[in-house]
Image 1 (spheres, rainbow, N blue to C red):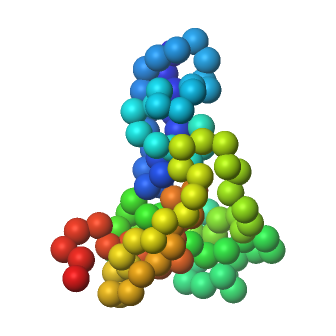
Image 2: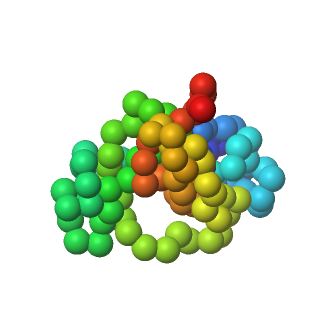
Length: 114
């Protein structure tokens, strides 16, 4: 059986194994934010471009080329390996928070960050 999940970096991950789609922590090849494909929202420049209960955020795994996407606002479901938010270098030289779904308030610098 093939299993698809959305990695903590916002990139899709697929692996073979098990007879069920839900595995205990440590059985996935990488930490993931949720089972199922990564979801993309409407492109945005700010939260004002999004609908009610949505915020404009950037997929952390896309690096400095990331485009803003409208994603659901609110708390993350804390039932898997990437539960907490983390700090990461932003492409503008500041820091940004990456939430448990793999979204940040600014594009995340993945390499050659100063």
